[in-house]
Amino acid sequence: MKKKFITIILAAGLLPVACTDDFDALNTDPTKSSSTTFDANLLLPSVQWKYVSSTAGYSGAILFQSMWVQILASTTSGAANYYSNADKYVISSNTNSYLASTWNGDYSAASFAYEMEQLTKDKPALANLGNIAIIMQVQSLATISDVYGDIPYSEALQAKSGTTLPVYDAQESIYKSLLAKLETATAALDASKPIPTNDAFANYKGDISKWKKYGYSLMLKMAMRLVKTDPATAKTYAEKAAAGGTFASMADDAYVIGDDANGYTNGNASALATPADLYQVRWSKTLIDFLKAKGDPRLSKIAEVPIAGLAGNQNAAAGSSDVAIQMGLPNGYDLNGGATDITKAAGFPGANGTGGDATPIGKYSRPTGIYRARGGPLFVLTFAETELLLAEAATRGFAVGTTTAAVHYKNAVSAGIQALGRFGAAAEITPAVADAFATAHPLVAGNALEQINTEYWATTGILFNFVESWNNWKRSGFPNLTPVNYVGNFSGGMIPRRQLYPTGEATLNGANYNEAVGRLSGGDKWQSRVWWDK
Image (cartoon, rainbow, N blue to C red; front, side, top):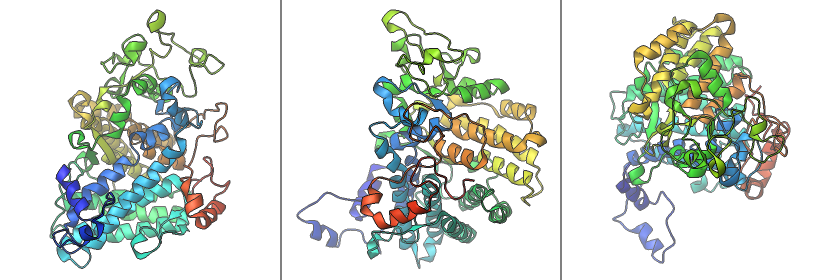
């Protein structure tokens, strides 16, 4: 993604521009792009970037789901009290802004994808791009619905034709419509026709075979969301996805690389680079205990104990990655001196540093420097995820091929370990090491669902795909997490199961918002459940 790309988009009038006395002339200038001359390929990276950015960094996930599902933890005091949203389910000054970010970002992605679809209609040479536009709309709208529940769908993205107050559709109807659209668009992808020329998925480069596998892998993920609420539909689409062909190897992983030099900064890295976040954001005890218990080789790559002392803990300089000393921070504690002060936690290791430079959280593990690369990867969907989903589908008796659940699981564990290499050479783990670990930790039939979904939680969490960790935890129930019940929390001492609708919806689209809220058991609450969350 380059600066000249944005310039072209602005010229096309597809992004907001500042007010100008020459606005009419600008929009009728025959030298400017129009729907007949604009290259729709230029919209694809905007769709992809807006999608991955909608849940990265301060856009929400690191401030919500990362700690709701106990991948990360924080004592949330001082300059970084904004993590109270996540670690203790307590409102901070910007909570209302955070909760709208995924909504705004993904609707923006869907809008660009819809525009791309319109620009490719009746243009056979752009048929593949048009179908990819539909697939990315499905990805974006499904994510919004997973996070919030019932959302504007059938009347969404129609502002150009005058619909500015769209109705909220029921999630059940949304999901079934999205799955049908996804099936049609994915099947229509044709490698004999022209490929996209501006693909931001790092290892796709417009490869239609990869996009076809992406479509079927997305179908599998969406199908498995429904295993409890609509098992028949889940089975039907999981089997269709497997028959169509999901990801075959890590080469099919869908991810976007940040381009910090041109303003496309990895939001997670940007957040973790601030002194307050360097100090406050730690790996959760739940995750570190899980990795240590199995001797997982990822631990030495992802976790470090910072340099001793308060100043050292606020410093990005590398700490110690010695596996023996890694310790996760328990969720739900603070630095306020009361009953929930971290010094009262079971197993508190003591402060490090001396005098005024001492800190009680100095011995707890934080993410290593691999996560602070502003040009680092942002993950959408991986081979490891799809193999875990196929392992579960096979365990449930779905007809997803002849490969056993145990083999899918082994493939997933190895791939999840190797996927860390996307963060750079410092994070690489060799295939031999990954395969050996996967072989030594096979799927146990009597505990398969818990084992598969706990691995899914760890793998997506370690790749900082926190929204996916949370959504799969909601629908599977694994791992079995103990909620934080901090004083003044907004979810009744429960791990939040949805985000509230953006505050502006109640005033700007009140009638439709109220109808949707009326369908939610418990109303517009953090602990209310979306349709598929049973």
